[in-house]
Image 1 (cartoon, rainbow, N blue to C red):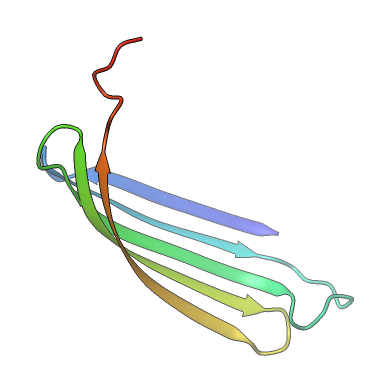
Image 2: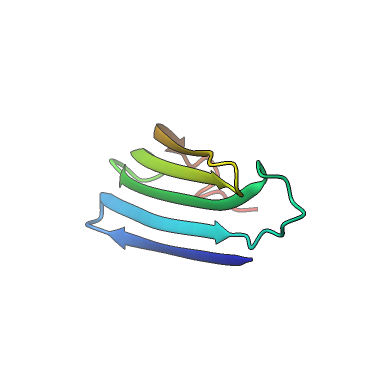
Length: 95
């Protein structure tokens, strides 16, 4: 099995940041495995986050995934968009 992961976080300014990343897994399947068993997968993402005020983050993210089976010829791509909002309730609290 081989797995590779690489991610980069970047702050464009005090209000904007991004992450971009890629991962891959490759299985060396044996002849005893089913043709529909997992062989290789890819995953990638890129996002842009906006921090309008302290403790608030708003952003969008694009995600890509790909699966390839061992030997039945099946493979599929998956594309997703995700939007999120975060409020940090704990920041500034002392215990």
